[in-house]
Length: 328
Image (cartoon, rainbow, N blue to C red; front, side):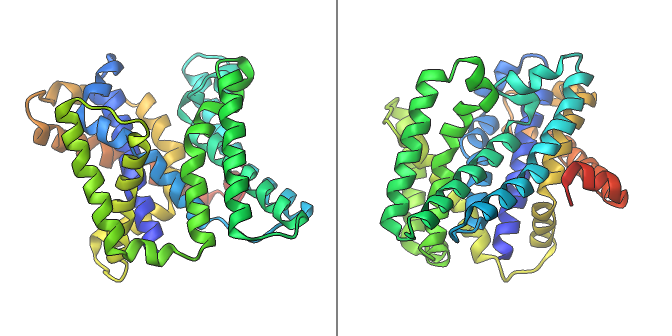
């Protein structure tokens, strides 16, 4: 499914842009990022997009205990080991103790790897329950998903602000589980193609986005609309890539390449942003010109992505190191 790789390419670009705005454009005054229109837009859906795509790709076949353990070990090697090695190196490089990586909510910027690992484990355990109960029906899957979310929500309410909650990253897990779960159910229903080629869903997503503009102007706030809006944004991104799946040009080929290498970009881009003196770009930005900001943001974003790919390719050439860090 080329449109998945292309969508992952868009997602990783948005992730890098978000961090460039936060750490470079806003400089030392990071709180300014939350008033920057580009950051506000990307913050609403770029990580849900990644999570949703991961849910689309994961298998829905029931698993026995041995298969669950094998799957868990594979994801541990792919996600948690880079989290510990690269995240640990960045934490130490910033003069902090390794416990900061484990206990802080943001995990030195690498919380996504831990959260994605936990989502995969929860999904695998759900498949194990289905295997033991000899059930693979949609109704059972939906009920089990709702039960899992209610458990996560309750745990977050009780222990979200405790040390254990910080180590587990229960806040992020509770926030992003719905996106992952919706994606797995869409795949289980074999509805992926129908969903993203649907004119009805495309129209509905556009209406949701348009209504958000009205809500902003009127100052109204509707409970749950943020989740619906982020689903609409990520749907539009994937639907566009789905319609361009058979189009082969420089743009789609580049997005596909970035998508296939998104793990390397994610792992190395944050390390580079934090340890590269890109703060100088702040002096070129203009609060009154969004177009100029976009142009300025493009330069460090492209540079960081290229350097991340370079780091990734260099480690690929060192097979032993690549095996240690990424388990491949």
